[in-house]
Length: 249
Ligand SMILES: Nc1nc2c(c(=O)[nH]1)N[C@H]1C(S)=C(S)[C@@H](COP(=O)(O)O)O[C@H]1N2
Ligand SMILES: [Mo]
Image 1: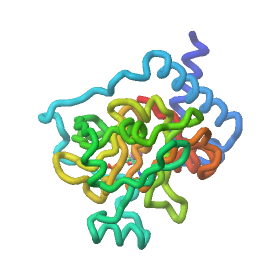
Image 2: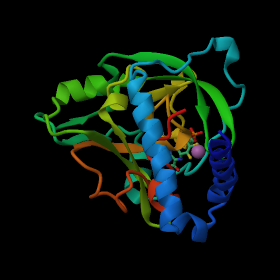
Image 3: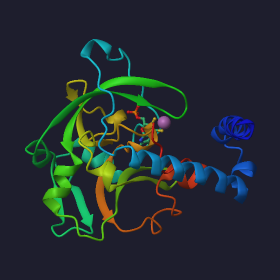
Image 4: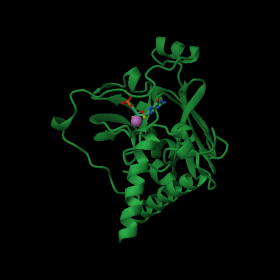
C-alpha cells in the first residue's frame, strides 16, 4: 500500500515537470518506460471495462459561453490559404491506406452521410476544459464506406498545420475510430466549424484528452502500425513531448 502511494506520488510530481517540457528527465529511458507502462496499463484496463462506453453528454444550458482555441489556429501553407478563400470548395478528405475503396470526399459528401450532434466536454492537458456542441459525420460511417482491410489497426489523421515545419498528426485505434461519438465535425455550436477550431473538419475523440482531437484534417489513413509516421509515437505531441498515445480520461 505504502509502496503504491509512493509510486503514485512520484508520478503526480513528475507529471507537471513533463508538461513544462523538462527534456532531460523525460528523455531518460527508464522514466519513459515507467510512463509507457502506465499508458499501456490504462489502455488495457479501458479496453477491458468496455470500449463502447459513451463519454458524458451535456444539456444546451451547460455549454460554455466561451470555447477558447488552442494550439494552431491558422495553418500557414499556401494550399490551406487557397482552400480557405474558396470556403473549402476544392477540399477533399483523402481516405487512404488499408481500405478496399479509397475515396476523396467533399464537405457536401460528408454532410450527405449520417450525422451526429453531441454536447461534450473538451479537456486539454494544459488544464482547461470547455463544453461545446459538435456536429459531424461518424468516422465509422466513412470507414464502413471505404471498407477497412483486415490488417487495419489504427487510423492516422493528417492535418494541414505544422509547428516549425513538423506536421501535426494524430492516431487512434479502431475501438476509438468506430466509437459512436467519434465524429468528423464540420459544425460547432450550431455554426460551421470556425477556422481556429479546425475548419473544414476536426475529429472529436471524446474519451481522450484534447490533443487527440486533430484539427484541419486533410486525410484519414488506415494503417497496421504507426512506426512510419513522425518519430513513430503516434502523434505530434507524443513525438515531441512524450504525451501518452492513449490519453484516456
Ligand atoms: N491540427 C491540430 N490539431 C490540434 C491542435 C493543433 O495545434 N493542431 N491542438 C490540439 C490541442 S492541444 C487542443 S487542446 C485542441 C484545441 O482545440 P480548440 O482549438 O478547438 O480549442 O486541439 C488539438 N488538435
Ligand atoms: Mo490541449
